[in-house]
Image 1 (cartoon, helix red, strand yellow):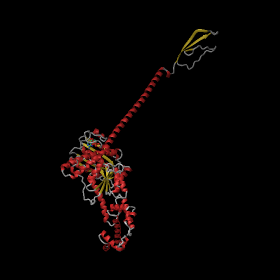
Image 2 (cartoon, rainbow, N blue to C red):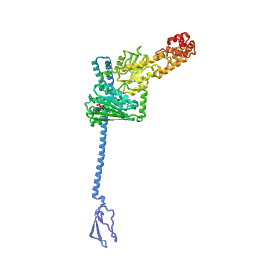
Image 3 (cartoon, rainbow, N blue to C red):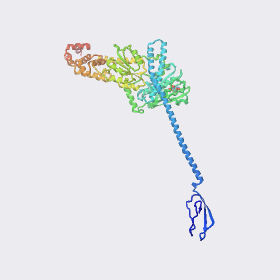
Image 4 (cartoon, protein in one colour):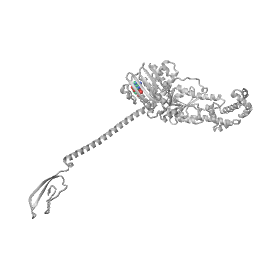
Length: 629
Ligand code: ADP
């Protein structure tokens, strides 16, 4: 019997002297043995043998302790890792939410400012216009001085407002790069010049130095204007009186480097990397908003260039802008956009970006345009002004009323209504209007044969250049960037009316009607070509009346009359006579026909009537012409 395993004695058969135990679990046992005699009587003496079965090593107590320790360690490690990861995720989520909240707050801030800027632009324009007008009328130097301060400060707010709107546009990708050939020397000189008054006023040694030999470069001029203007504005802002500011231009044929350098207050070295951050200002007490340089940086990047700065406190600051100038640096889209812009001939040459003008000279603020006698004002032309802002509408209306009959339309739909009932010589329309906007109005005007000859001038913010493109794309004759000066507005109206008058004048003095020279748009050109063709087909028909003519032209008699009058300054009858007499002149000049033959050939019933008409028209009789030749 094995004590610890067996419960009772195991009898062995006679002769067998062995027992076998296998797979004994580890532990202590005692092997007990009792012998029996031949009669089967058991002895009381028990022999015993202690047996100890040792466990395998990995089941030994120390191994088990080790296993438990390892297990605890693993569990602890896994738990810690999971916990740690969870904490990390929570932290990242919190940071993300925080970042998003910050972004949202910033977005809201910018959106608020942008909305405010939009709101501010109209009242600022309304302040600028009367001040401009008072300045141009007033001769008292004290009043002029005070008005100039008002004007300069208004311009200053406008500058900030525009900067913010430009920034927003650049950020939202609305500032599409439009690359085309630009004469960099001329452009930078123009911008440079617009700060000369301020330099004089602050007694600043102000210089421009260009070593560029081939100044025609592939660049976006609007971008360039904004970049240089912002850098110069800062230079003037942070450079005290009597110091220097210089602008430099260099090029290696591939890249243009613009340097704007000043000997002003400088920027601390540890702040240099932050100045391009939005809303960052080195010194909170500075006037400004911390947008200028971030806008510049964004624009430089969009122009595939780079900007660096070098500055030392008390010694001054130099900004280096490097831009590519070869076509290969730009995408096809950027190059095409530039081509389109050139085709539409949109330039802003005369509209330097408004810079901080608080120190400009009073005598320079007066940008009066030369006033010459008006050709078109022998009769009062009718100008229709369309704007949804009633104050602007009234102001422009009052200002134009002296010289023109003015029609005021509060929206595009009203303007279209007026077009069908009133004779209008020119339309001045805002672009942004609810429902029918300026672009739609212009399209409606230019696509209708009855109205296509009416010049359309669009009023729009300079930063809405895409609107202007759209406006000119639908046939607008000119645009005026907002905020506008009343003098510029009047001059542009006068120019448009004068161009029309000049065309009519040229038409009335020529012996040949050339539709392309008389008409200012394809629709009118087509109309005139058709009118000439119809007349030539009926030139020998003395019975061909204005009624028949109107029928052939698929128009009512009155509409034909109105259109003829607008395009040529003459009635339909005068037009018919002019075509007949021009033809007569041409035939007589060939010397192949006599007067009475020509008279019949151009549809005159009697030679005497022909002769009288001819003389009245050309100032000499047909026979005199024959003699002359
Ligand atoms: P701000 O409207 O404040 O001028 P900017 O973004 O144009 O905003 O400039 C950011 C900061 O960089 C300014 O607050 C100014 O401290 C510093 N700075 C920019 N240009 C110059 C300069 N030419 N000289 C000295 N400091 C400058």
